[in-house]
Length: 171
Image (spheres, helix red, strand yellow):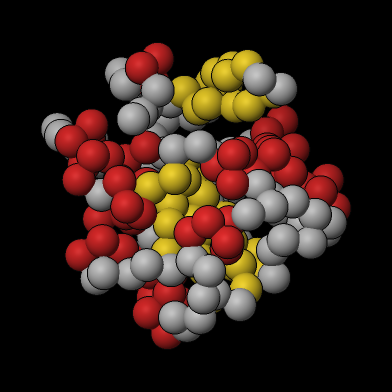
């Protein structure tokens, strides 16, 4: 289920470019390691999307046809916000994206334990949203406490960088 080359590298993120899967190095994970990470991906597979680019343009129709809107929690971490919102708004599909495999596993666990069918999480990079969502597909994007990248030389990696915000507009 989880790409083989990612199984031992928490700091490596899959990035789609065309039909190829390249890997992008990121800073270290922001959650405690899990001993049974691969098993958790199997246990909570109902709430984990392993091929987000394949869903572009059809998230609602393939995952939650009764949903009226698609909301994105960008940099979702362990999923507290997305799970809470999914409970409050059962008619909205919530997608949580984060680049940390451990956080995605924990978020999916919460969604599965609560039986939420309108909440799914994907291992993905916020810089490549146009690969995961079609233009006009998202109704809302939430950015709650994403990784700050405090160094000036890393400013362009911030999800709130002006270039990133402009890139979100068509989605």
